[in-house]
Image (cartoon, rainbow, N blue to C red; front, side):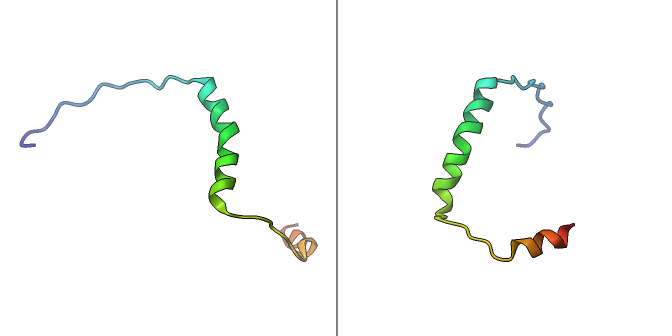
Length: 53
């Protein structure tokens, strides 16, 4: 590029509720498959909760 290009025209986003619904349904499943977590176990959670109160 040797010269300044003209600005691009604004393209308004087109909201699609089906895309939102698909993302909300599929994202948790995809994240679980990518995380390789089998089980999470907490100890002394009452003390942790007291620290935030």
